[in-house]
View (spheres, rainbow, N blue to C red):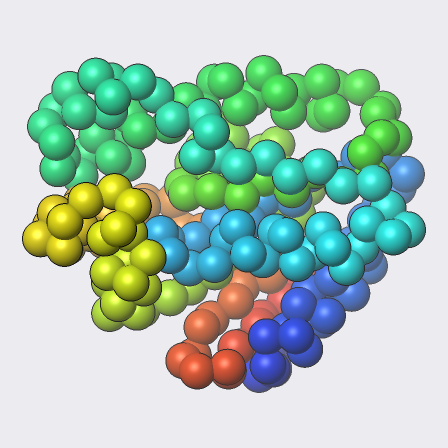
Length: 203
């Protein structure tokens, strides 16, 4: 894989260039954007959409919208790592949406962008034509979470516990089990500040 370091805008331009280059035909291309909580998946999907929608039709799917019921998510405990990794999201429901685009030669939209957690899971990875993995340090995840989530989903103590005992450990297991960095067509490393490294798999 070739590597370069860029500002955020430069990185996204390089990424989009590679995505367009890898689009093999006129049928819908499904892009997966995977990364830990607070890694910038939603922001990146919106930026890609804004930059390519002038000449292309684009649909964004947020995997957070496919969360299982609270009862299902917490059946192994409120802060269960295993439940967060395997029971939080409804992969089957997402597959129902994506399956027609893999089985039929749809040409609209040109791109579907799916952004979310754990997208390298063996049950869903084959649905992506292009896969992006965003890598971020655990310390940066926690820092961003405390800034973003305290006023939204709970107290500072709850957010700290949720991330240190559930989200971050789940990502560690996920990366070892599913190797999203090896699956990715593009691997983005957040180096800190406005510095991003991006690695492209040889095509």
